[in-house]
Amino acid sequence: MSVKSAPYKSRLNNLRIRSVSNRSSGILLHPTSLPSPFGIGDLGAEARAFIDFLHDAGQTLWQTLPLGPTGYGDSPYQAISAFAGNPLLIDPRQLIEDGWLNQSVINVARFSPGLVKFEIVRDFKERVLHLAFLHFKRSSLSNYPGFEEFCDHSSWWLTDYATFRALKDMHGGSSWTDWHRELSQRDPITLSTIKSTLEEQILEQKFFQFIFFHQWKALRSYSRERGVRIIGDLPIFVAHDSADVWAHREYFKLNRDGKPTVVAGVPPDYFSDTGQLWGNPLYDWVRLRADNFQWWIDRVRWSLELFDFVRVDHFRGFAACWEIPATDVTAQNGEWVDTPGRELFATLKKTLGDLAIIAENLGVITPDVERLREEFGFPGMRVLQFAFGGDATNDHLPHNHTRETVVYTGTHDNDTTIGWFENLDGDQREYCLQYLAIDRSEINWDMIRAAMASVADNAIIPMQDVLGLPSEARMNLPASENGNWTWRMPLNSIPHELIQRLKVLTEVYGRSTE
Image (cartoon, rainbow, N blue to C red; front, side, top):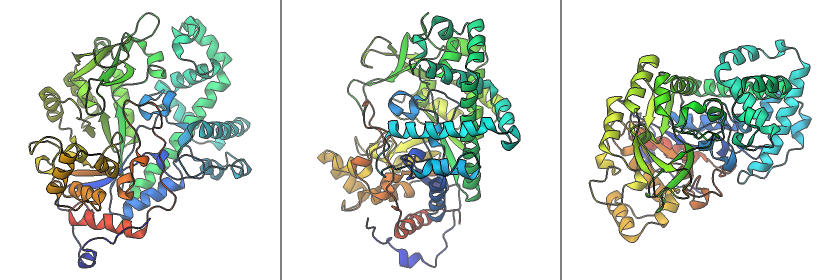
């Protein structure tokens, strides 16, 4: 891959440009998209190399997608737990270094460097992790410092999650509503008996979580040493087939069989003429309020333990949710139903203090949503790919940005900038060219420059745009079911010239810490 030399580089070689504000910038990349020898990115050497790249390029932020264990469709936004980590992100090489696995186990691993093939990767990782667990069983707990402490510290979610996973495996992966009624309804006597029967399987799931968070803690420590802060992602909703809904069905709008009566989505929008039918169960806010929002307090506290900042997905759902009858096949016939977001965030702030939250305020945003965001001081989002429809009042145009904002060229739901530009209609393409005063030869870098130049305090660039990749590198196409979440970075794809180019732009626009 050829990369042009950075513009004005020679004039800046000896110039030190220091940031005089809180301005910063970073990269959006999910760990699954990192290159690795095992068919999927993980928390190992390549993640550390990526942090080194961020540091060398003057970036101080790394934004990920949700890190939970994925279920059907492999979407990180449909995790089977709001608290657990995804075992597919565990690095086998660290298991060897920590003495939990034999080198011979991974010597036979052969994966192509292309897209993530989740089924193949899952088979390999589950086999490797099971062997590590067998080693764990044969060893003394003294060889695993912190395991019992982790289980005690995390028991408020870990026991339910591990039990749910063991039961799900016992039922061949079927949804919890299809289990025996005594198990789906969590009959105390039946549940106690099954926990005894599945004691080893439950312990195995706890061990996997211990390994995940052991590796995540080490990676985050490395990130801090390199001056890089991590932005996590907290989806407002959880998957119906999840440990959270199974264990806390009283907090969701379900019928007597445990199935949703209404589900989440959004009305027709930029991405779909029939809206987006996500299918997540909606919260029973009356019950959550009666418990002083304790489930949400636990969830936000846990997220802020794991990340430096948390992007809250679909923030507008804290003002009102689009409720769709569970029997509908599109999102067109829903209705907006008010939610107690102000009361919730007041409780969170009172309990947890200042909240390092970024509000994803995209889509159908009404004044009450913005009032809620502004009242609690959460920065919102602006996306440059949305800027060139409409006129000069478009909020996504850089001249309409405000400081308390995070600006993106695109998000995980957008096409790559090169793919987006190629598919623009004529009027929007012409407006983009006029506004940016460009010749279209390097649209990805022109958009990166516009984001860096924005008055917004923070700028985040998808890695695909830094690499200048076409639509084939898109991470997700909303309202589609196939081909998402599989993109991975090519090996050795960050040449020195590209690192320097990004660093220079960061310095020019006052986003460097040096």
